[in-house]
Length: 113
Image 1: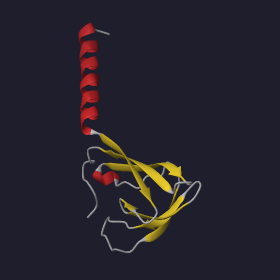
Image 2: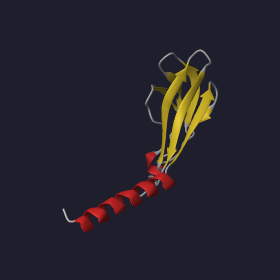
Image 3: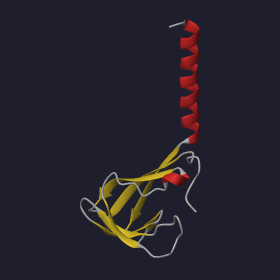
Image 4: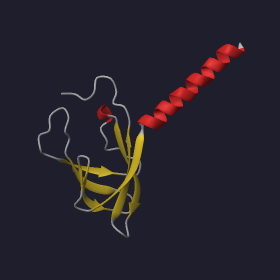
């Protein structure tokens, strides 16, 4: 491969990596029973799952929730907003759970109305 083409490809990869690093933000969020994260109200923390009520806000928020059980790795973020919130830790003995929230660029088109 031509050295100039290879150099351009390497520069593009570096620029893309810098862009992703600057536009994606991540944080850890710890919650307990009775607290709400995103649209999920935490009601019970089990050894390997959590139980709660999910209040969906798209396409139209009705204020009525549905029972939902989350396991490690489940995501309660709204990808249409560019938000991922994965359940990453269940601390049963202290009755705390941890989500890893990642905010990035929302996809083209956004969320449904």
